[in-house]
Length: 185
Image (cartoon, rainbow, N blue to C red; front, side):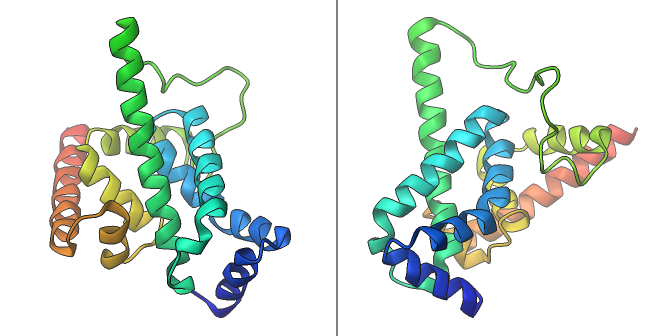
């Protein structure tokens, strides 16, 4: 983490609102993209980013190394995603609703910020391929690519050994190559 970012984290520890605003601006797109890619739900992703920062504000005292703020933040987001899946599963069981259909876009809504970088068609194809990955592989890949986290930071965020992260990334890349080969055939 750069020195200005560490300074922001130190200021955030002292509840300086402008520091939190800067940290939110710096990390919100990557967090949103990560949550959106895992959940497939734009609104849930917004909620997860908001919950992540609320928890970060409440628990900044638990951060031991200011230089690891990004991985700590993604760890919180990861746990928020896990809670989202558990909650969704409970609701589906209670109401006998099968989850799904959450990828449908709302007519007239703004484009997703992560999709703005790619053409809509290519982005949808890429998301479909990534969504086909098992959750642990998808999570590791997104933390590495979107979160720009190191293997050690991903391991800390997901509470798994570094070797497991390496394996998940390797398998995710291999699976994506296979899926890409099949989608072009």
